[in-house]
Amino acid sequence: MLKYIPTILSPELVKYLMEMGHGDEVVIADANFPAHRIGQRVVRCDGHGVPALLDAILTVLPLDTYSNYQAGLMQVVAGDPTVPVIWDDYKALLEKHYPGTAIKEFERFAFYEQAEKAYLVIQTGEGALYGNIILKKGVIAS
Image (cartoon, rainbow, N blue to C red; front, side):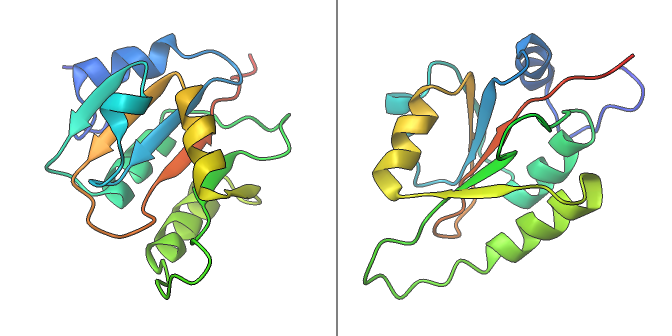
């Protein structure tokens, strides 16, 4: 056990977060996301929703302030009546940990293309539609 690491973060997940470098991205994916087809590395967190994992990850992961976005969401497909209210939770958590976070919305297939380049995909049990989020890792200044 280590101090200050949220218990929701497994040793495997912490290892991958530690291995990430500046500009690397992590996808926290909902249960419908094709994680194993898209991800280079996949960590499963089926018993958890995205908000709980996002909150925990944001306590240990610096975001990239040098990029034009620090987080990314998948746009609702044209004609889909879904309103992704879970985004309000994401925005509140980002604001809590990193006020002023820039969020980029990616068209669905552009989101998949971006996710294919991510260092890590975390597959959750999140049932909310459009519940995926990308985080871009930054640096820790000494």
